[in-house]
Image 1: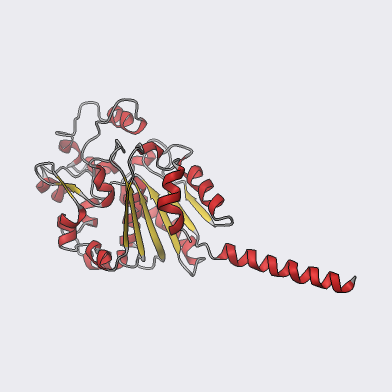
Image 2 (image 1 turned 180 degrees about the vertical axis):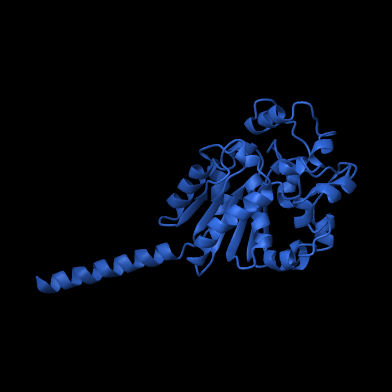
Length: 301
């Protein structure tokens, strides 16, 4: 009986250690919501992660999660969120993964470029305007864009630059990444966020920003033609309009050709993975199980 007890104990110990090692092999994941966040955004993603990788340490960034606070200036968001996630990173010696949705993706990029001690292994940008945004006119009934029309009822995409490209307009998060292809001179003059991250304007810290960004081991860019909010949808993969509103793939953009913040360097490292998924509306990316299974799960180990 005693031998059986010892045997059972050894089996229990072996299984327990195996479970512990299994859990420990999943790096912590930090989740960032989008603009005008739905309360279920982060829980939806978290539940998928925990079901696929039980025991994963998931941190949900819930700052700036109210209607008006979500459009606070992005540098303010970057500063305060950095302070929160630094604590997670310090307790994760093997690194963390960063999964950021919609506006959250461009916010997270600001964190990556300005945080010299970040230890992000994989940055997953889920339907985020990495190349900028130009247009808010998808079909009526979309919560995000209906709210934008509520905030800016007298502006269309052709003339909203008159507000966004002012000091006051840059106090609104959307203005921080509004990229009007017909007014690039004003964009580069007034944009205090995206143009700075892209090193398209004077930035005395451009070398440091690029160096920080290149600490990434992998960047995953997810978007699709039926998104309905990110405009053009290829912005989710760093593509954008030229002055004729023809979409340039990211390898033909100014920021890639000049390697202004490290995109070309990451490409040469084979460190960029893109996914173009049809049939997914903007508000459904975090809910779509197929997207998680094909494009997200394997990068969270």
